[in-house]
Image 1: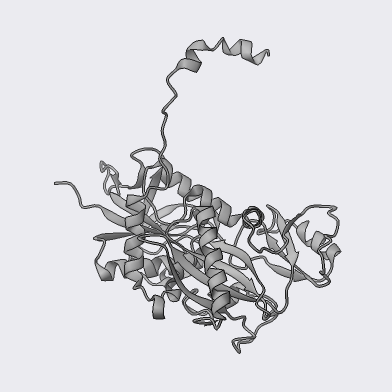
Image 2 (image 1 turned 135 degrees about the vertical axis):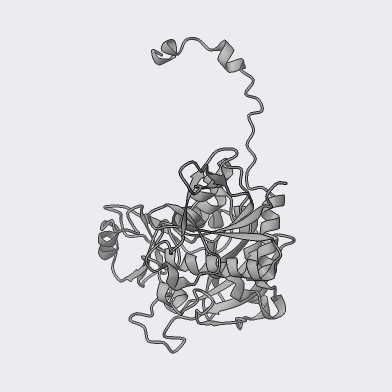
Amino acid sequence: MSEQKAVGVVFGGPSPEHDVSILTGLQAARALRSAGVMGKVEAIYWTKAGAFSLVDAGLEARDFLDGPPKAARELRFSAQPGGGFFLAGKGLFATERRLELDAVVNCCHGGPGEDGTLQAALDLAELPYTGPAAAAAALGMDKLAFAGLVRGAGLPCLPRELVVPGAEEPRWEGFEGQYIVKPRFGGSSIGIEVIATWPDVVRFASLGGPHTWRGVVVEPYLEEAFDVEVAMRAYPQMELSLFARALRAREAGRSSTKGAILSYSDKYLGGEGMVSAPRQLPAELPPGLQKELAGAAVTVAGLAGLRGIWRTDFLVEPSGRWWVNEVNTIPGSLAKYLWTGAAERPFSRLLADMVSEARERPSARFTAAGADGTALRSAAAIASKLSQ
C-alpha cells in the first residue's frame, strides 16, 4: 500500500525577509493541520545558508531564533523529474526516503523563494506549488520591469528610472520634490530611502549595499500619497479582498524615526507579520475610486499571469489621483488579514484552494515536441561550425 501523499509548506530561505517568512509558514502549516482538509502536512524549513530541513509543523517562532530547531532533519533537494525533497534514513545502512508531496505551499518572501529561483527548481522536479510561476515571480521582483509592464498597458504609474553612475537628473514634468530610491530587486520596503538631492541619489546607488548591488531605481516622492492594497486570487474564480489603507507609524500613533514612507518595521514588526501591521480596513475610499482600483488590479493580474494569492499595492493622493505601485506575489501572512468582512474567506479554505489550483493548473509543462533529430542529422561537423 503506497504512502499517503502530503502537502509541504516551505518557509524561510536566504532572504532579508527570512524571519517574516517563518511566521507566514508556521501560520499556514498550523491552519492546514488544524483544519485537516489536506491530509498530512510536512513543514520544510529553508535555512539562511540555503539548506532544507524537515521540522515539526507545530513549532513556534522562537524555536527558529538560532537556526534549524532541535530535532530538525536534513533534507536533500533534487531538481529533476522524480526529484523533490529527500529525507536521509537513520542507521548505517538506511536509505533516503522521498517526501511524497501532492503540492508545496510556498511561504517564502523575497530572495530566491519569491524571485523565480525556487519556482524554477520545483518546475524541474515536476512538483506542483502555490503562488506565481517562475516568470511571474521574476517580474514581480523587478521593479523596473514591472513598471514598464504597467505603463505599457496604459495604467497610471509613476515615472521610474534606473540609476547608473553618471546618470543625469530626470526631468519629470511638474516635479520639484524629493526622490524615493528603491532596490531594483526586492520588496517589503527593505532598502528604500527618501533622498532630497540628485547627487545624493547617485551616491546612494553607487554604495553597492546588500540590497542595492543589483541596481537602484528612482521615482518622485509624493509626501501626501498613501498606500492602498488589495489581495486577489484567480481560483476557483477571480475574487478581490477588501481594500485596506496601510498606515505609517506616525499615522497609527506609533513612534517612528522617520515616518516618511511605509517602512519594513511598520509592515512586519508588530508581532505577527502583516497581520498586526496598522491599517484602515476596509479603506475609506469613494466608490468610484475603488472601482477604478479594482479594474486596474484585475488588469495587472492578467498581464502578469499570477497564481495563488497576491497583493496589488497602489499610491493614492487625497485628491483621488492614483498610481499602480507594485505587486507582491507572495504577500506576508499570504494576505489572510484582508479576507474579512464582506470578503471573508477562512484561511484554511484559502490555503486549500491554493493547493487545488497548484494540482489542477501546473505552473509549467515542458515538452521536447519538434526535437526529432532533423537538425542533428543535417548538421555538419562541429569543428566546421567553429571556424565560420
